Image (spheres, each protein chain N blue to C red):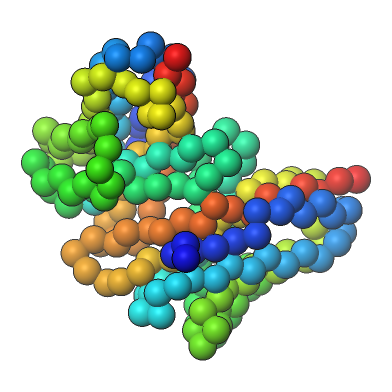
Length: 112
Length: 111
């Protein structure tokens, strides 16, 4: 089983739609969780951290379910500029360094 | 502010040729440095990480090596490239293990 699994998509949605991505992780001791965004042929960039209580940043909402070992990202009122690949990222443990484990990504295509 | 530089942006190399990719960080001291590879259609795979000068840890057995000759310099090398070494190579840094920032990446094609 992969350490971090995501539905590769693509999710094709119209502008203004609400779309949700889920991601599951295998290590129950995982410490920290993030969503990164990666545009085509570019480096990943941090979108938001995921906190146990859930957190929101504008149109984006991230949630963590430790019992079921999954995190989610909800995007409301989708924009054309939201088209990208969204990477689920997990830090599996705390130590002298932090090693990010990346999912393969979920591709989102927002169309007019 | 902290910045990370990675070059070249693209590279086409023949099988069997050597490789050297360089990454430098500015505006911070003693960062943790990382090399990741992203194969086409796949997730990022951690290749090497370094917590200090001369300290290199390898995550997967492979045809590549890494070195950290200076605090803010991280180099990825190969003596003889294989076709399977093609991919998107990303350098990243963090301080105290948080706030990963990636360089702009090198797209390597081995032909």
